[in-house]
Image (tube, rainbow, N blue to C red):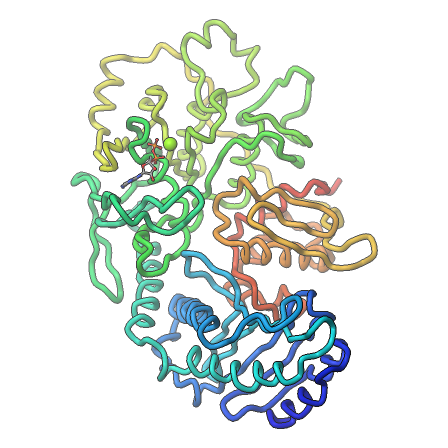
Length: 569
Ligand code: ADP
Ligand code: MG
Protein backbone atom coordinates (compact mmCIF):
# COMPACT_ATOMS: atom_id res chain seq x y z
CA UNK A 1 0.00 0.00 0.00
CA UNK A 2 1.37 3.44 -0.92
CA UNK A 3 1.61 5.88 1.94
CA UNK A 4 0.56 9.47 2.53
CA UNK A 5 4.02 10.88 1.76
CA UNK A 6 3.80 9.49 -1.72
CA UNK A 7 0.30 10.93 -2.08
CA UNK A 8 1.73 14.32 -1.18
CA UNK A 9 4.55 14.02 -3.72
CA UNK A 10 2.10 13.06 -6.44
CA UNK A 11 -0.27 15.92 -5.65
CA UNK A 12 2.53 18.48 -5.72
CA UNK A 13 3.80 17.03 -8.98
CA UNK A 14 0.28 17.30 -10.47
CA UNK A 15 0.18 21.04 -9.78
CA UNK A 16 -0.68 22.96 -12.93
CA UNK A 17 -1.58 19.85 -14.95
CA UNK A 18 -4.95 19.23 -16.64
CA UNK A 19 -7.73 18.15 -14.27
CA UNK A 20 -7.90 14.60 -15.68
CA UNK A 21 -4.48 13.85 -14.18
CA UNK A 22 -6.13 13.70 -10.72
CA UNK A 23 -7.11 10.15 -11.70
CA UNK A 24 -3.58 9.20 -10.60
CA UNK A 25 -4.62 9.41 -6.97
CA UNK A 26 -7.43 6.86 -7.23
CA UNK A 27 -6.63 3.93 -4.96
CA UNK A 28 -5.61 3.24 -1.39
CA UNK A 29 -3.27 5.29 0.80
CA UNK A 30 -1.88 4.51 4.24
CA UNK A 31 -1.92 7.37 6.75
CA UNK A 32 -0.56 7.14 10.31
CA UNK A 33 -4.05 6.85 11.86
CA UNK A 34 -6.20 5.57 9.01
CA UNK A 35 -6.43 4.27 5.48
CA UNK A 36 -7.71 6.59 2.77
CA UNK A 37 -9.60 5.12 -0.18
CA UNK A 38 -9.94 7.48 -3.09
CA UNK A 39 -12.91 5.64 -4.55
CA UNK A 40 -13.83 8.04 -7.29
CA UNK A 41 -12.17 11.08 -8.79
CA UNK A 42 -14.45 13.61 -10.46
CA UNK A 43 -13.91 14.34 -14.16
CA UNK A 44 -13.79 18.12 -13.80
CA UNK A 45 -14.12 20.72 -11.03
CA UNK A 46 -17.83 21.22 -11.72
CA UNK A 47 -18.78 17.52 -11.77
CA UNK A 48 -20.16 15.65 -8.77
CA UNK A 49 -17.36 15.86 -6.18
CA UNK A 50 -14.88 13.05 -5.68
CA UNK A 51 -15.67 10.27 -3.22
CA UNK A 52 -13.19 9.65 -0.44
CA UNK A 53 -13.50 7.00 2.22
CA UNK A 54 -11.46 6.89 5.40
CA UNK A 55 -11.13 3.71 7.45
CA UNK A 56 -9.94 4.12 11.02
CA UNK A 57 -9.02 0.88 12.81
CA UNK A 58 -11.04 0.44 15.98
CA UNK A 59 -7.81 0.29 18.03
CA UNK A 60 -7.26 3.87 16.94
CA UNK A 61 -10.90 5.09 16.97
CA UNK A 62 -11.37 3.54 20.41
CA UNK A 63 -15.16 3.57 20.51
CA UNK A 64 -16.33 1.24 23.28
CA UNK A 65 -18.44 -1.66 22.03
CA UNK A 66 -21.22 -0.57 24.31
CA UNK A 67 -22.07 2.22 21.85
CA UNK A 68 -22.80 -0.19 19.01
CA UNK A 69 -23.70 -3.43 20.74
CA UNK A 70 -27.18 -3.61 19.14
CA UNK A 71 -28.75 -2.25 15.99
CA UNK A 72 -30.55 0.82 17.41
CA UNK A 73 -27.34 1.86 19.17
CA UNK A 74 -25.17 1.29 16.13
CA UNK A 75 -27.55 3.30 13.93
CA UNK A 76 -27.59 6.15 16.47
CA UNK A 77 -23.81 6.11 16.86
CA UNK A 78 -23.29 6.31 13.11
CA UNK A 79 -25.87 9.08 12.84
CA UNK A 80 -24.06 10.96 15.60
CA UNK A 81 -20.69 10.69 13.88
CA UNK A 82 -22.18 12.03 10.64
CA UNK A 83 -23.41 15.07 12.54
CA UNK A 84 -20.05 15.57 14.26
CA UNK A 85 -18.22 15.47 10.93
CA UNK A 86 -20.70 17.94 9.45
CA UNK A 87 -20.09 20.33 12.35
CA UNK A 88 -16.31 20.14 12.05
CA UNK A 89 -16.10 20.61 8.28
CA UNK A 90 -16.56 24.40 8.29
CA UNK A 91 -14.20 24.74 11.25
CA UNK A 92 -11.36 22.57 10.04
CA UNK A 93 -11.43 23.06 6.29
CA UNK A 94 -10.87 26.19 4.30
CA UNK A 95 -13.70 25.59 1.87
CA UNK A 96 -13.86 27.11 -1.58
CA UNK A 97 -10.39 27.13 -3.19
CA UNK A 98 -11.01 27.60 -6.87
CA UNK A 99 -13.40 26.71 -9.65
CA UNK A 100 -16.57 24.63 -9.25
CA UNK A 101 -16.58 22.53 -6.08
CA UNK A 102 -12.87 23.12 -5.52
CA UNK A 103 -11.84 22.86 -1.89
CA UNK A 104 -15.13 21.73 -0.44
CA UNK A 105 -15.62 18.85 1.95
CA UNK A 106 -19.12 17.49 2.59
CA UNK A 107 -20.90 14.65 4.31
CA UNK A 108 -24.47 13.70 3.62
CA UNK A 109 -27.20 16.20 4.54
CA UNK A 110 -29.58 15.24 7.35
CA UNK A 111 -32.59 16.44 9.29
CA UNK A 112 -34.14 15.70 12.67
CA UNK A 113 -34.27 11.91 12.35
CA UNK A 114 -31.81 9.29 13.47
CA UNK A 115 -31.66 7.12 10.36
CA UNK A 116 -29.52 4.26 9.13
CA UNK A 117 -27.01 6.04 6.90
CA UNK A 118 -24.24 5.01 4.55
CA UNK A 119 -21.96 7.97 5.34
CA UNK A 120 -20.53 6.37 8.48
CA UNK A 121 -20.16 2.66 9.07
CA UNK A 122 -18.99 1.18 12.38
CA UNK A 123 -17.85 -2.41 12.85
CA UNK A 124 -15.82 -4.09 15.60
CA UNK A 125 -12.86 -3.79 13.30
CA UNK A 126 -13.02 -0.18 12.16
CA UNK A 127 -14.95 3.05 11.60
CA UNK A 128 -15.47 4.18 8.03
CA UNK A 129 -16.68 7.53 6.78
CA UNK A 130 -17.45 8.67 3.27
CA UNK A 131 -16.80 12.27 2.31
CA UNK A 132 -17.47 14.18 -0.85
CA UNK A 133 -14.46 16.30 -1.74
CA UNK A 134 -14.06 18.85 -4.49
CA UNK A 135 -10.48 18.39 -5.68
CA UNK A 136 -9.22 21.93 -6.27
CA UNK A 137 -8.45 23.58 -9.56
CA UNK A 138 -8.02 27.02 -11.06
CA UNK A 139 -10.15 26.80 -14.16
CA UNK A 140 -9.25 23.25 -15.20
CA UNK A 141 -5.67 23.31 -13.94
CA UNK A 142 -4.91 21.22 -10.89
CA UNK A 143 -4.07 23.14 -7.72
CA UNK A 144 -1.72 20.45 -6.40
CA UNK A 145 -0.44 22.27 -3.34
CA UNK A 146 -3.96 23.14 -2.28
CA UNK A 147 -4.97 19.52 -2.79
CA UNK A 148 -2.05 18.41 -0.66
CA UNK A 149 -3.18 20.69 2.13
CA UNK A 150 -6.74 19.36 1.89
CA UNK A 151 -5.87 15.70 1.93
CA UNK A 152 -2.77 15.74 4.14
CA UNK A 153 -3.72 18.29 6.73
CA UNK A 154 -7.46 19.09 6.69
CA UNK A 155 -8.61 15.51 6.20
CA UNK A 156 -6.51 14.05 9.05
CA UNK A 157 -7.78 16.83 11.32
CA UNK A 158 -11.38 15.91 10.44
CA UNK A 159 -10.71 12.27 11.18
CA UNK A 160 -9.07 13.17 14.47
CA UNK A 161 -11.90 15.40 15.71
CA UNK A 162 -14.79 13.55 14.14
CA UNK A 163 -14.02 9.87 14.47
CA UNK A 164 -11.69 9.36 17.44
CA UNK A 165 -13.58 8.58 20.63
CA UNK A 166 -11.22 10.55 22.81
CA UNK A 167 -12.15 13.78 21.02
CA UNK A 168 -15.92 13.27 20.96
CA UNK A 169 -18.38 14.92 23.30
CA UNK A 170 -19.13 11.79 25.34
CA UNK A 171 -22.19 13.16 27.10
CA UNK A 172 -23.78 14.13 23.79
CA UNK A 173 -22.89 10.77 22.26
CA UNK A 174 -24.33 8.89 25.21
CA UNK A 175 -27.52 10.95 24.98
CA UNK A 176 -27.86 10.38 21.23
CA UNK A 177 -27.42 6.63 21.50
CA UNK A 178 -29.70 6.34 24.54
CA UNK A 179 -32.34 8.42 22.77
CA UNK A 180 -32.33 6.21 19.69
CA UNK A 181 -32.40 3.00 21.68
CA UNK A 182 -35.12 4.23 24.04
CA UNK A 183 -37.38 5.35 21.19
CA UNK A 184 -36.94 2.00 19.50
CA UNK A 185 -37.81 0.22 22.75
CA UNK A 186 -40.92 2.35 23.25
CA UNK A 187 -42.07 1.52 19.74
CA UNK A 188 -41.60 -2.16 20.42
CA UNK A 189 -43.88 -2.00 23.45
CA UNK A 190 -46.80 -0.61 21.44
CA UNK A 191 -47.98 -3.89 19.96
CA UNK A 192 -48.16 -5.85 23.21
CA UNK A 193 -49.94 -2.95 24.90
CA UNK A 194 -52.42 -2.86 21.98
CA UNK A 195 -51.45 0.71 21.21
CA UNK A 196 -50.72 2.26 17.85
CA UNK A 197 -48.90 5.34 19.11
CA UNK A 198 -47.44 6.98 22.19
CA UNK A 199 -46.89 10.68 22.85
CA UNK A 200 -44.73 11.44 25.87
CA UNK A 201 -45.66 13.96 28.48
CA UNK A 202 -43.76 17.18 27.79
CA UNK A 203 -43.18 16.44 24.12
CA UNK A 204 -42.92 19.50 21.87
CA UNK A 205 -44.93 18.82 18.72
CA UNK A 206 -45.17 22.12 16.80
CA UNK A 207 -42.42 22.95 14.34
CA UNK A 208 -40.59 26.20 13.81
CA UNK A 209 -42.37 26.88 10.51
CA UNK A 210 -44.15 25.22 7.64
CA UNK A 211 -40.81 24.67 5.92
CA UNK A 212 -38.70 23.70 8.92
CA UNK A 213 -38.73 20.48 10.86
CA UNK A 214 -37.03 21.98 13.90
CA UNK A 215 -39.01 22.50 17.11
CA UNK A 216 -40.94 25.71 17.69
CA UNK A 217 -38.79 27.66 20.09
CA UNK A 218 -41.15 30.15 21.64
CA UNK A 219 -44.65 29.63 22.94
CA UNK A 220 -44.84 25.89 22.36
CA UNK A 221 -47.30 24.21 24.71
CA UNK A 222 -45.75 20.94 25.96
CA UNK A 223 -47.87 17.84 25.45
CA UNK A 224 -50.02 16.80 28.40
CA UNK A 225 -51.64 13.36 28.27
CA UNK A 226 -55.32 13.19 29.28
CA UNK A 227 -55.51 11.06 32.48
CA UNK A 228 -57.82 8.43 30.96
CA UNK A 229 -55.39 7.73 28.11
CA UNK A 230 -52.21 7.97 30.17
CA UNK A 231 -49.91 4.97 30.09
CA UNK A 232 -46.38 4.37 31.33
CA UNK A 233 -43.84 2.62 29.13
CA UNK A 234 -40.30 1.50 29.88
CA UNK A 235 -37.07 2.85 28.48
CA UNK A 236 -33.86 0.81 28.74
CA UNK A 237 -31.70 3.89 29.43
CA UNK A 238 -33.86 6.51 31.07
CA UNK A 239 -36.45 4.45 32.94
CA UNK A 240 -40.24 4.68 32.80
CA UNK A 241 -41.98 7.43 30.90
CA UNK A 242 -45.58 8.58 31.01
CA UNK A 243 -47.57 9.67 28.01
CA UNK A 244 -50.73 9.33 25.98
CA UNK A 245 -51.29 5.91 24.48
CA UNK A 246 -53.52 5.78 21.41
CA UNK A 247 -55.28 2.40 21.41
CA UNK A 248 -55.82 0.21 18.37
CA UNK A 249 -59.09 0.72 16.52
CA UNK A 250 -60.57 3.93 15.15
CA UNK A 251 -59.38 7.15 16.76
CA UNK A 252 -60.71 10.59 15.98
CA UNK A 253 -58.85 13.79 16.66
CA UNK A 254 -61.42 16.58 16.86
CA UNK A 255 -61.37 20.19 18.00
CA UNK A 256 -61.63 23.71 16.74
CA UNK A 257 -59.58 25.08 13.87
CA UNK A 258 -56.02 26.05 14.80
CA UNK A 259 -56.11 23.99 18.01
CA UNK A 260 -53.24 21.66 17.06
CA UNK A 261 -54.98 18.66 15.42
CA UNK A 262 -52.82 18.47 12.31
CA UNK A 263 -49.71 19.13 14.35
CA UNK A 264 -50.47 16.07 16.49
CA UNK A 265 -51.13 13.94 13.42
CA UNK A 266 -47.88 15.07 11.75
CA UNK A 267 -45.94 14.19 14.88
CA UNK A 268 -47.54 10.74 14.82
CA UNK A 269 -46.62 10.39 11.13
CA UNK A 270 -42.99 11.19 11.94
CA UNK A 271 -43.15 8.89 14.96
CA UNK A 272 -42.25 5.96 12.72
CA UNK A 273 -38.68 7.35 12.89
CA UNK A 274 -36.46 8.07 15.87
CA UNK A 275 -35.50 11.67 16.52
CA UNK A 276 -32.40 13.41 17.76
CA UNK A 277 -32.15 14.75 21.32
CA UNK A 278 -33.72 18.20 21.53
CA UNK A 279 -36.18 17.59 18.71
CA UNK A 280 -39.15 17.57 21.06
CA UNK A 281 -40.50 14.37 19.53
CA UNK A 282 -37.81 12.03 20.90
CA UNK A 283 -40.45 9.99 22.68
CA UNK A 284 -43.29 10.30 20.23
CA UNK A 285 -43.45 6.87 18.65
CA UNK A 286 -45.86 5.27 16.24
CA UNK A 287 -46.07 1.70 15.00
CA UNK A 288 -43.58 1.19 12.21
CA UNK A 289 -46.40 0.22 9.83
CA UNK A 290 -48.21 3.57 10.10
CA UNK A 291 -48.74 5.46 6.87
CA UNK A 292 -50.16 8.84 5.94
CA UNK A 293 -53.08 8.65 3.55
CA UNK A 294 -54.23 11.65 1.55
CA UNK A 295 -55.95 12.68 -1.62
CA UNK A 296 -53.54 13.15 -4.47
CA UNK A 297 -55.41 14.19 -7.57
CA UNK A 298 -53.50 13.90 -10.80
CA UNK A 299 -51.46 10.93 -9.67
CA UNK A 300 -50.81 7.86 -11.77
CA UNK A 301 -52.38 4.56 -10.66
CA UNK A 302 -51.43 1.13 -11.96
CA UNK A 303 -53.86 -1.78 -11.73
CA UNK A 304 -55.11 -1.26 -8.19
CA UNK A 305 -58.29 -2.86 -6.85
CA UNK A 306 -60.16 0.12 -5.42
CA UNK A 307 -63.52 -1.68 -5.44
CA UNK A 308 -63.95 -1.61 -1.64
CA UNK A 309 -64.35 2.16 -2.06
CA UNK A 310 -65.29 2.77 -5.65
CA UNK A 311 -67.55 0.83 -7.92
CA UNK A 312 -69.87 1.44 -10.87
CA UNK A 313 -67.96 4.29 -12.45
CA UNK A 314 -70.11 6.05 -15.08
CA UNK A 315 -67.77 5.04 -17.91
CA UNK A 316 -67.94 1.36 -16.93
CA UNK A 317 -64.28 1.16 -15.81
CA UNK A 318 -63.44 -1.98 -13.85
CA UNK A 319 -62.41 -0.71 -10.44
CA UNK A 320 -60.94 -4.07 -9.45
CA UNK A 321 -58.10 -3.32 -11.83
CA UNK A 322 -58.04 0.43 -11.88
CA UNK A 323 -55.42 2.35 -13.82
CA UNK A 324 -55.27 6.01 -14.68
CA UNK A 325 -52.76 8.68 -15.61
CA UNK A 326 -54.87 11.25 -13.81
CA UNK A 327 -56.71 10.15 -10.68
CA UNK A 328 -59.40 12.29 -9.06
CA UNK A 329 -59.26 13.27 -5.40
CA UNK A 330 -61.40 10.36 -4.25
CA UNK A 331 -59.95 7.68 -6.53
CA UNK A 332 -56.42 8.74 -5.62
CA UNK A 333 -57.22 8.50 -1.92
CA UNK A 334 -58.80 5.08 -2.44
CA UNK A 335 -55.73 3.92 -4.39
CA UNK A 336 -53.41 5.29 -1.70
CA UNK A 337 -55.22 3.23 0.93
CA UNK A 338 -55.29 0.04 -1.13
CA UNK A 339 -51.60 0.33 -2.00
CA UNK A 340 -50.71 1.01 1.62
CA UNK A 341 -52.67 -2.06 2.73
CA UNK A 342 -51.04 -4.15 0.03
CA UNK A 343 -47.62 -3.05 1.29
CA UNK A 344 -48.53 -4.11 4.84
CA UNK A 345 -49.77 -0.94 6.54
CA UNK A 346 -51.35 -1.50 9.96
CA UNK A 347 -52.23 2.10 10.85
CA UNK A 348 -53.70 4.73 8.54
CA UNK A 349 -53.22 8.41 9.37
CA UNK A 350 -55.75 10.64 7.66
CA UNK A 351 -56.15 14.42 7.95
CA UNK A 352 -59.31 16.13 6.75
CA UNK A 353 -57.09 19.00 5.52
CA UNK A 354 -55.67 16.76 2.81
CA UNK A 355 -58.61 14.45 2.15
CA UNK A 356 -61.32 14.42 -0.50
CA UNK A 357 -64.58 15.31 1.26
CA UNK A 358 -66.67 12.96 -0.86
CA UNK A 359 -64.28 10.15 0.01
CA UNK A 360 -64.55 10.77 3.74
CA UNK A 361 -68.29 11.41 4.25
CA UNK A 362 -71.71 11.07 2.67
CA UNK A 363 -74.43 12.31 4.91
CA UNK A 364 -78.12 11.57 5.31
CA UNK A 365 -79.32 14.36 3.07
CA UNK A 366 -76.93 13.47 0.29
CA UNK A 367 -78.03 9.85 0.55
CA UNK A 368 -81.57 10.97 -0.01
CA UNK A 369 -80.76 13.19 -2.97
CA UNK A 370 -78.19 10.98 -4.72
CA UNK A 371 -79.20 7.33 -4.56
CA UNK A 372 -76.60 4.70 -3.69
CA UNK A 373 -76.82 3.32 -7.26
CA UNK A 374 -75.75 6.71 -8.61
CA UNK A 375 -72.80 7.15 -6.26
CA UNK A 376 -69.69 5.10 -7.10
CA UNK A 377 -68.02 6.03 -3.80
CA UNK A 378 -68.45 4.18 -0.54
CA UNK A 379 -67.14 6.70 1.97
CA UNK A 380 -64.27 5.81 4.30
CA UNK A 381 -66.76 6.32 7.13
CA UNK A 382 -68.45 3.04 6.15
CA UNK A 383 -65.20 1.09 5.69
CA UNK A 384 -63.06 2.18 8.60
CA UNK A 385 -64.64 -0.30 11.04
CA UNK A 386 -64.68 -3.34 8.73
CA UNK A 387 -61.05 -2.55 7.92
CA UNK A 388 -60.17 -2.96 11.58
CA UNK A 389 -62.41 -5.99 12.10
CA UNK A 390 -61.24 -7.89 9.02
CA UNK A 391 -57.58 -6.91 8.82
CA UNK A 392 -56.66 -5.39 12.20
CA UNK A 393 -55.80 -2.10 10.52
CA UNK A 394 -56.31 0.90 12.82
CA UNK A 395 -57.03 4.45 11.71
CA UNK A 396 -56.31 7.81 13.26
CA UNK A 397 -58.36 10.56 11.69
CA UNK A 398 -58.29 14.29 12.11
CA UNK A 399 -61.92 15.21 11.70
CA UNK A 400 -63.08 18.59 12.92
CA UNK A 401 -65.82 18.90 10.35
CA UNK A 402 -68.13 15.90 10.69
CA UNK A 403 -69.67 14.25 13.72
CA UNK A 404 -70.83 11.29 11.62
CA UNK A 405 -67.54 9.62 12.54
CA UNK A 406 -68.57 9.48 16.24
CA UNK A 407 -70.61 6.46 15.19
CA UNK A 408 -67.55 4.43 14.31
CA UNK A 409 -64.93 5.83 16.68
CA UNK A 410 -63.44 3.83 19.54
CA UNK A 411 -61.52 6.80 20.92
CA UNK A 412 -62.16 10.50 20.47
CA UNK A 413 -59.48 13.00 21.42
CA UNK A 414 -60.30 16.68 21.41
CA UNK A 415 -57.49 19.18 20.98
CA UNK A 416 -58.33 22.18 23.07
CA UNK A 417 -55.80 25.00 22.78
CA UNK A 418 -53.07 22.38 22.09
CA UNK A 419 -54.15 20.23 25.04
CA UNK A 420 -55.69 16.83 24.37
CA UNK A 421 -58.89 15.91 26.17
CA UNK A 422 -60.46 12.45 26.09
CA UNK A 423 -64.04 13.10 24.92
CA UNK A 424 -64.88 9.50 23.97
CA UNK A 425 -67.73 9.22 26.49
CA UNK A 426 -69.25 12.54 25.49
CA UNK A 427 -69.12 11.58 21.81
CA UNK A 428 -70.89 8.29 22.61
CA UNK A 429 -73.53 10.13 24.56
CA UNK A 430 -74.12 12.41 21.58
CA UNK A 431 -74.47 9.34 19.36
CA UNK A 432 -77.18 8.03 21.70
CA UNK A 433 -78.92 11.39 21.92
CA UNK A 434 -78.87 12.14 18.18
CA UNK A 435 -78.99 8.80 16.37
CA UNK A 436 -78.03 9.02 12.71
CA UNK A 437 -80.65 8.38 10.10
CA UNK A 438 -78.00 7.81 7.45
CA UNK A 439 -77.73 4.21 6.24
CA UNK A 440 -74.33 2.52 6.38
CA UNK A 441 -73.34 1.64 2.82
CA UNK A 442 -70.15 -0.33 3.33
CA UNK A 443 -71.48 -3.83 3.98
CA UNK A 444 -70.21 -6.24 6.63
CA UNK A 445 -66.75 -6.70 5.19
CA UNK A 446 -64.00 -4.49 3.89
CA UNK A 447 -63.32 -6.48 0.74
CA UNK A 448 -60.24 -8.02 -0.82
CA UNK A 449 -56.68 -6.64 -0.74
CA UNK A 450 -55.15 -8.29 -3.81
CA UNK A 451 -51.40 -8.80 -4.20
CA UNK A 452 -50.30 -7.32 -7.48
CA UNK A 453 -47.57 -8.88 -9.58
CA UNK A 454 -45.70 -6.20 -11.47
CA UNK A 455 -43.99 -6.34 -14.82
CA UNK A 456 -40.51 -5.51 -13.57
CA UNK A 457 -39.29 -4.64 -17.04
CA UNK A 458 -41.53 -1.58 -16.80
CA UNK A 459 -39.14 -0.15 -14.17
CA UNK A 460 -36.31 1.48 -16.05
CA UNK A 461 -33.51 3.12 -14.15
CA UNK A 462 -31.37 3.71 -17.21
CA UNK A 463 -31.63 6.26 -19.94
CA UNK A 464 -32.12 4.92 -23.48
CA UNK A 465 -28.33 5.13 -23.85
CA UNK A 466 -27.89 2.73 -20.94
CA UNK A 467 -26.74 5.14 -18.26
CA UNK A 468 -27.99 4.58 -14.72
CA UNK A 469 -29.74 7.82 -13.77
CA UNK A 470 -30.93 8.52 -10.24
CA UNK A 471 -31.51 12.07 -9.02
CA UNK A 472 -33.56 12.98 -6.01
CA UNK A 473 -34.95 16.14 -4.51
CA UNK A 474 -37.55 16.61 -1.81
CA UNK A 475 -40.17 16.88 -4.54
CA UNK A 476 -39.22 14.32 -7.14
CA UNK A 477 -37.15 11.28 -7.95
CA UNK A 478 -35.75 10.88 -11.40
CA UNK A 479 -35.28 7.27 -12.40
CA UNK A 480 -33.88 6.82 -15.87
CA UNK A 481 -36.02 9.07 -18.01
CA UNK A 482 -39.05 8.99 -15.70
CA UNK A 483 -39.83 11.45 -12.95
CA UNK A 484 -41.69 10.22 -9.88
CA UNK A 485 -43.66 12.84 -7.97
CA UNK A 486 -42.69 12.61 -4.28
CA UNK A 487 -44.20 15.91 -3.24
CA UNK A 488 -47.20 14.29 -1.57
CA UNK A 489 -45.43 11.38 0.10
CA UNK A 490 -45.20 12.85 3.59
CA UNK A 491 -43.12 10.25 5.35
CA UNK A 492 -39.99 10.57 3.28
CA UNK A 493 -38.00 12.29 5.98
CA UNK A 494 -35.00 13.36 3.89
CA UNK A 495 -33.65 13.53 0.37
CA UNK A 496 -31.04 10.82 1.13
CA UNK A 497 -33.96 8.43 1.67
CA UNK A 498 -35.43 9.38 -1.70
CA UNK A 499 -32.07 8.73 -3.32
CA UNK A 500 -31.91 5.33 -1.63
CA UNK A 501 -35.38 4.53 -2.97
CA UNK A 502 -33.99 5.28 -6.44
CA UNK A 503 -31.11 2.85 -6.00
CA UNK A 504 -33.33 0.12 -4.58
CA UNK A 505 -35.76 0.47 -7.49
CA UNK A 506 -32.81 0.33 -9.87
CA UNK A 507 -31.60 -2.80 -8.12
CA UNK A 508 -35.03 -4.44 -8.43
CA UNK A 509 -35.13 -3.61 -12.11
CA UNK A 510 -31.57 -4.81 -12.79
CA UNK A 511 -32.23 -8.03 -10.85
CA UNK A 512 -35.67 -8.56 -12.34
CA UNK A 513 -35.03 -12.24 -12.93
CA UNK A 514 -34.64 -12.84 -9.21
CA UNK A 515 -37.91 -11.07 -8.39
CA UNK A 516 -39.92 -11.96 -11.49
CA UNK A 517 -43.37 -13.38 -10.81
CA UNK A 518 -43.33 -12.47 -7.12
CA UNK A 519 -46.08 -10.26 -5.73
CA UNK A 520 -44.93 -6.76 -4.83
CA UNK A 521 -45.39 -7.47 -1.12
CA UNK A 522 -42.88 -10.32 -1.27
CA UNK A 523 -40.35 -8.13 -3.02
CA UNK A 524 -40.82 -5.57 -0.23
CA UNK A 525 -40.31 -8.30 2.38
CA UNK A 526 -37.05 -9.31 0.75
CA UNK A 527 -35.78 -5.76 0.44
CA UNK A 528 -36.66 -5.07 4.05
CA UNK A 529 -34.84 -8.17 5.27
CA UNK A 530 -31.73 -7.20 3.34
CA UNK A 531 -31.90 -3.63 4.67
CA UNK A 532 -32.10 -4.93 8.23
CA UNK A 533 -29.29 -7.45 7.86
CA UNK A 534 -26.84 -5.71 5.57
CA UNK A 535 -27.99 -2.11 5.23
CA UNK A 536 -28.09 -0.36 1.89
CA UNK A 537 -24.80 -1.70 0.54
CA UNK A 538 -26.18 -4.65 -1.43
CA UNK A 539 -28.36 -2.25 -3.44
CA UNK A 540 -25.58 0.14 -4.42
CA UNK A 541 -23.22 -0.09 -7.37
CA UNK A 542 -20.46 1.55 -5.31
CA UNK A 543 -19.77 2.96 -1.85
CA UNK A 544 -21.98 6.04 -1.88
CA UNK A 545 -22.17 8.08 1.29
CA UNK A 546 -25.25 10.17 0.62
CA UNK A 547 -28.02 7.70 1.39
CA UNK A 548 -30.37 6.90 4.27
CA UNK A 549 -32.58 3.84 4.58
CA UNK A 550 -36.24 4.26 3.61
CA UNK A 551 -39.16 2.22 4.90
CA UNK A 552 -40.80 -0.39 2.72
CA UNK A 553 -43.85 1.87 2.43
CA UNK A 554 -42.14 4.85 0.85
CA UNK A 555 -40.37 2.46 -1.50
CA UNK A 556 -43.73 1.01 -2.56
CA UNK A 557 -45.34 4.47 -2.79
CA UNK A 558 -42.59 5.75 -5.08
CA UNK A 559 -42.82 2.67 -7.27
CA UNK A 560 -46.60 3.02 -7.46
CA UNK A 561 -46.18 6.52 -8.86
CA UNK A 562 -43.75 5.52 -11.59
CA UNK A 563 -45.73 6.36 -14.71
CA UNK A 564 -44.21 3.60 -16.82
CA UNK A 565 -45.22 0.90 -14.32
CA UNK A 566 -47.25 -2.02 -15.69
CA UNK A 567 -48.78 -5.15 -14.20
CA UNK A 568 -47.64 -8.54 -15.48
CA UNK A 569 -50.29 -9.89 -17.87
P1 ADP B 1 -55.54 22.48 13.33
O1 ADP B 1 -55.17 21.30 12.49
O2 ADP B 1 -56.27 22.08 14.57
O3 ADP B 1 -56.29 23.52 12.57
P2 ADP B 1 -52.70 22.99 13.49
O4 ADP B 1 -52.21 21.70 14.02
O5 ADP B 1 -52.49 23.26 12.05
O6 ADP B 1 -54.23 23.20 13.87
O7 ADP B 1 -52.00 24.11 14.38
C1 ADP B 1 -52.28 25.46 14.23
C2 ADP B 1 -51.08 26.30 14.66
O8 ADP B 1 -50.79 26.09 16.03
C3 ADP B 1 -49.81 25.95 13.90
O9 ADP B 1 -49.14 27.14 13.58
C4 ADP B 1 -49.01 25.13 14.88
O10 ADP B 1 -47.63 25.25 14.69
C5 ADP B 1 -49.43 25.72 16.21
N1 ADP B 1 -49.35 24.73 17.29
C6 ADP B 1 -49.75 23.43 17.23
N2 ADP B 1 -49.51 22.80 18.39
C7 ADP B 1 -48.96 23.70 19.22
C8 ADP B 1 -48.49 23.67 20.57
N3 ADP B 1 -48.52 22.54 21.29
N4 ADP B 1 -47.96 24.80 21.08
C9 ADP B 1 -47.91 25.94 20.36
N5 ADP B 1 -48.34 26.04 19.10
C10 ADP B 1 -48.86 24.95 18.51
MG1 MG C 1 -55.60 20.97 10.46
